[in-house]
Length: 337
Image 1 (cartoon, rainbow, N blue to C red):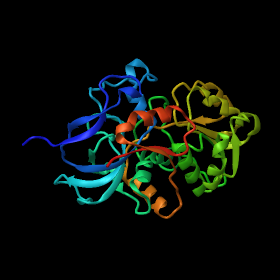
Image 2 (image 1 turned 180 degrees about the vertical axis):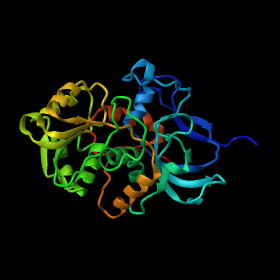
Image 3 (image 1 turned 120 degrees about the vertical axis):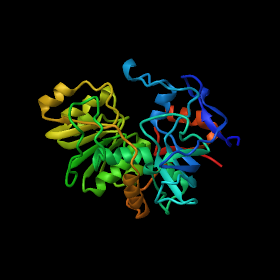
């Protein structure tokens, strides 16, 4: 019996957004423990373009072998089309969302009309939001959750000798850099829910947005360097990350912590040790159980999800160009008919 086809976005070589092609391919086949999802929306995230570019930021020995053609993406929201015989807890017709097989890549990825997903990566979509908003949640929400609330896995971060441990947030002063972005706007809300006093750093156009999410203070980084005006914070969550992260160390109390979401390039561990500051990060991993908890917070109105923009699946390249433009408020999402 011939395989059924679907539309997907694939790339056949590493490079820019123009190499993302909307084309026909075979639908994924189910294996044990999997659910076939008809995708309604797919969220885009930085690892999508890291993959597309060939993981240029990683040391050569860390770059995985990528089989071409490859389909990028991990975050989906959609409807269960079929389930493997050994799967329990889901039925055909259920609306679900999830971060699929992350960290990994391959043919059954998010920029496609259908995805074969491990059932353990999925949770029921919150009833109170549509598929676009649900697809915006998984990677950003799980990143914020695993950094701030509960790691939920024991996989060691190769960039540090100790395991990542979230810190108590109640009555603590927390600065979030990149507070309007995908991870930042969700981390802000989770920190507030845990009782933190949150200082949000973003560009001026996002001031009202982050205050509406609960930020206690706001710094427009285009006018004021946060390291010049902030001191004695308990935790800095740098949702931008990279080499500039070390500039936040002087504002952190001894015994405090710095959590860079993107730790590659950070070169301040000696200074952090001298200041008595813990620097820690973790690699986000798929977890349907944590997503279900986050979904309950979304349904209750405790956590809101913001959408920067949407693009049809066929325009994935334009979505990546929008991401490269920066100043994102919330998430960029691909829509699929």
